[in-house]
Length: 97
Image 1: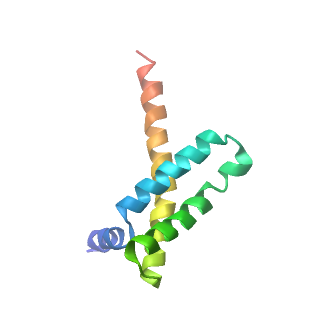
Image 2: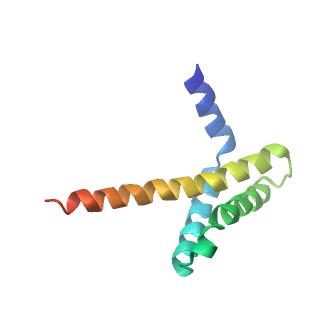
C-alpha cells in the first residue's frame, strides 16, 4: 500500500521532460563554470527552470504545476549525483583488475 502511494507521487509530480532538461542544464553549468560558489546554486537553478518549463508545457499556473516543476527540477540534481556516483564506482572497480 505504501509503495503504491510513493509511486503515485512520482508519476503525478515528476515530469520526465522537465527532469531531463534540468539535468542537462545542471550538467552544463557544473562543467562550464567549475566553481564551488556557482555549483552550490545548481539546485536553485534546476528548481526554477523546472517550474518555468512545467508552466510553459502545461500552459497553466496552478500549485500542482508549480510543485511538479520544483520536484522535477530538484530530482534532476539527485539523478545527476546518482549517475555520477555510478560512474565513479564503475571506474574504481574497473581499475582493480
